[in-house]
Image (cartoon, rainbow, N blue to C red; front, side):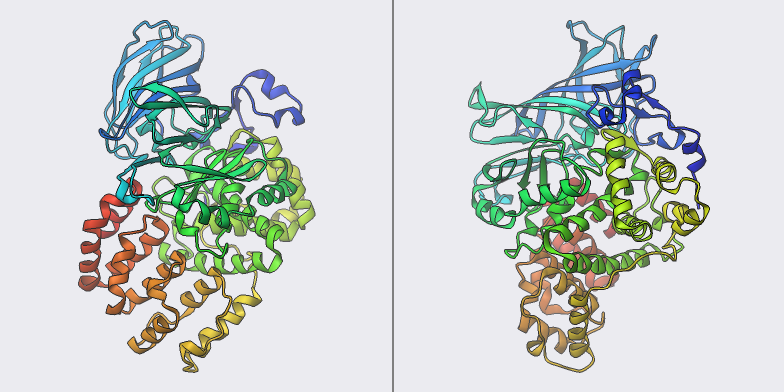
Length: 632
């Protein structure tokens, strides 16, 4: 167990304008002109070259041209700099950027150097300030930028026009923006994107020119502005053949035209979700909440970019049973976007809080049983993740982790379970009041695990030794495995599913006789997940004939089924498996399939290599890197 609480109790040292520190609590909830940074030891970010305590970026103005033929972004990034008196230089993060020159805002050249690159971290871009408070970097983001995925028309829904999107989390935006790429260094920003005139550009900010404006040479420009300081990984763009449909007064969906009807149907409850979230933990502070449904190559379920959540098309199953994904990304508008982990080892402060909040939104939208069902299913996932991590004593099961530790979904589910346990012990009314005040007091600020625990002790525990012992805060935050006060919820609906598993696996009932009518995605996942890992070819064939699992249009169910088929080396599923690996880019589905193929030795590796040879170029660079590591 590693405890950093003592450092937090000694005081969170914020570097900010004095007025921001002295303002009353109600006023501090508003977006500050310059966001504070944390300077406590545990807030030092090992994945940035920046030294923000000496000189930091507070604002970014981007002016970039998008070139699909060359797969480059070219132009300028103008950075506003807040420096200590006498500071001579500012250090930025960069990854394979072609920098041509750096000037001040009067056009005078500033000396600059790019240092040696480190794997994954990129290279430091050091600029001599010479008194400048605003520097302008002239550069090109080269082909292969880790944050950018350039899709040819064949990999889009419409098949006629190319598509570009970015994925900045965790530290990939330094591959297209020369800035201080750390979640603890929040920045406001504007952007002007010049794109082909038959395409639309969208970004995670207020859209100042929704239809674009002429830019000459068959191009048009789109302008955007984010007036609230955000961690730089939340600066996001997408360019493609897009259409828009409103879902409510402040909500809407962007998608390729051929996907728009399906997307709008699935997202019909989005406006109500925002209202439910606000009733739980206070006002939504970002203006609009729109979503963008991306092509299948998008590597994640969703990305919580402010004002514009990016979503995978795999959630479009026609029954709205996977809108918990939307609830999750919406919840990030509070936990993650509003209060952000200062460094990535504290990433559970984003994902654990958000997974808990997501479940509360689902309860508010669809009732207690739906929320319990999803929490119960998450418990199953957590048990599998802990086993894969090496068991309850494995370091990767800690919430507050180390850089480089692969924790899968542990941050999400164990973090959520921690907060549910706090809710259960403290009572929902007391817990909700605290969490609302927490979001308000730390709005637009970075946070650490130590800082959260110190805040909880100050405002809730208040020196009560019996309560401190009951909550087991340090065990949850810094210990491995699960403390013994973890609260598991049990779903009656999933108990009924388990009865069908028993009927098929133990009582030898036929698949066609099972009571599956009306099952949601979650119930199917419980069914497939709880089947014995070793099944006869006859049993597998019976299931596939009855439910067409190998060709299921539901990617969640199909992925789980294919994993079971691989574990049994069931050859009839191989064609469907290879098709799936070549048509879906979501890492959540791909990682376990490739991992299971590797576990099957030569038989599985032959399939994996054959599929990957054609699929790799269609995957996002992050996903390809993950699969590379598995297959090596």
